[in-house]
Image (tube, rainbow, N blue to C red; front, side, top):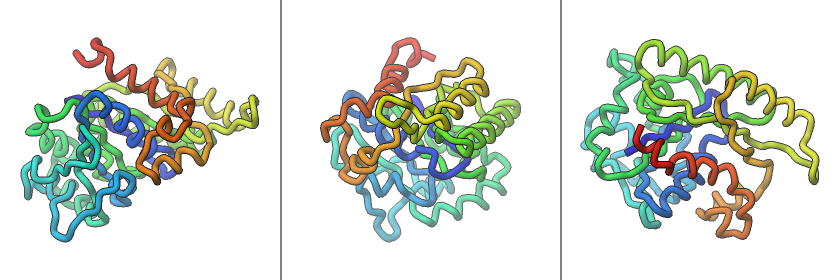
Length: 258
């Protein structure tokens, strides 16, 4: 199982959008485990899963109160499975902080699941918290979505600093797979100056890291999310370009052998 963590230290950067569409495309050919590691639980909602009272979630898995398989739910689509969250996930913060090994706990909890799935897609919370640190520690590959704006560039800088710190401590041993520009604004065939400036800044900051095709500013993404569909299923295959670029990367033989 290859664990792909979608992380960013600000809200509104496209994490859930990236996790959802990439996971859906991977699930066309492979078994995919989604993990909603955000107490806001947007990924759980868009995957149309309702957490029942007292049902195990990511919180119980992190605290080692249940086995990994007991927190996994099958979704209404082939090859798609979910470890959900609800607002109770915030209670994991103190547990992770007091454990003395919070950065590696999630990776350890997921080990019993590695033979069940081909990919694990984790949607990380939008802040520097114990949970976000734990998700980065669990990553084989990181994707960092960043809004094509000054806010997005600043979020990218902070996220890269966190990743670097965890790498120096030996808590992150994975690979930065790339950056995903989000809400790239175009007017007809002309890109806005703000978007172009921000994406150029991302290229300079990351110094050779892959910058994927942009997630454009479009209501079609929200439409597909709300309907639980792929963009191509709604007749907008061109908008899937960034996720298909990621798909090609993560399904190459060379990458899977790393």
